[in-house]
Length: 493
Length: 95
Image (cartoon, each protein chain N blue to C red):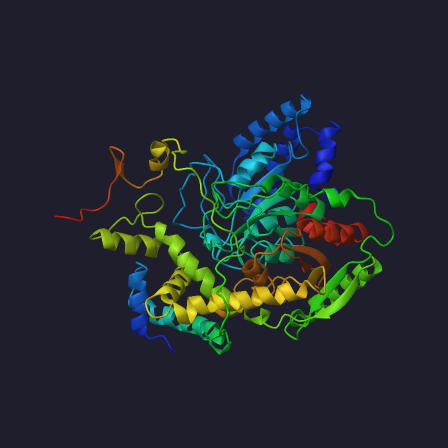
């Protein structure tokens, strides 16, 4: 088989009746059964549901009432509620939780006719950068099973990288779409905060959580985003904006210099000595390609961005400590088997239900919000968050997009960073700022290490610049083939 | 500032999470490392800076004061650990 198995390609074959949605669903379930035992990307596979949705998609296509995504198999990160299906959040706390309703983005992709084949593994409550905090065991990187797939959306990323599904959803609070996309050699987009509703997304840090798509190409991300975006009154932070077709700019004809006039900002803070040399070389080569495509590069500075990690590790745990207080063993989820009284039930339920990293973050958040420390930590972090946003606002006067590595290193080995949470947190040094500002950012593959691990390039834009970012990535992918490479396990090579 | 073992016990109590006696010092060591990183913020001059609580400076939307939800308590209680007659059961609080 070819290494590319894109949504756009499958959509064309479905439209031409070369393949049916039922055949695709069967093939997808078969690939998952064969390949996923080595990956652990799926927590739940819903074969019966997938076949029923596939039959419905074939009927819709036969009636001529189907959009481009009808019959396309996808998977959802297990943080997104799916009515009637287990939604575990990678946690023992929700190990048997069956969602009573669909998340907004799940509804959108269902309405578009996608075929949901299952729910993907993730770091517990989306807290982690390696998938090692999942209560259901880590996901393996399809390029090298000794390496992590990144996190927290590691299951979705690995499933797309291994060509189990052509697209999947993720959520990104500090890099949880882009960093695993980088480490597994696929595309992942974190849209502008407020573009895609958080309704039915089990909350981690509400001011940062953003749903977004994973796929092999920027074009496929645009197709998925079309079905995920849109106003939703059930999320008070959902933005009411005119509906946009994110594929429109991609279809525009382009000459030899399709990116002529594009100014790429290169923050000196993204190109420091901390980057792995192979990552640095791949990014330089990608920038050379962008110049061939007509873009110019300009050196910029984001002086406060280095403080993204400490700001994030105040704000995100603070919001998490509040959001996760709902897990108390009363209304849903795990309840301890033995306890003395109500307070003891809460304490034991939470001690048993949450893993070490989640507990750590709840404790950090509890502390920074506790009496006497609020101003010194939480308010201080919100002020530095403003300074970081100001850095970007200034930069947009000098450039149209900002580029650099998505992560300072390629995929690391299991266990390498588990004893040192701060080292783990620093893996998100380049991704966190886009969550703090709320502006969009994408990761796409731009090279490989000598050892065969993928390297990701991050493209950041100003608020609502999704179309521009996707177009920039698309033009690069039309001129290169990094995105078409698949791990040996996926091609049977 | 540094975090004491008593601080760890106090926040564990506030967060309603049992941390057993042997684990306190290990949790403490990890939290100390995290706070050492977070404390970099104290060196930044933020005088006159407006705190940023949200990505977009938008006013929270208002809606009409009318019931829009349907009654789904049976669905929602299906996932509860213990219910009876439509009520959530918890250990006795008042003797």
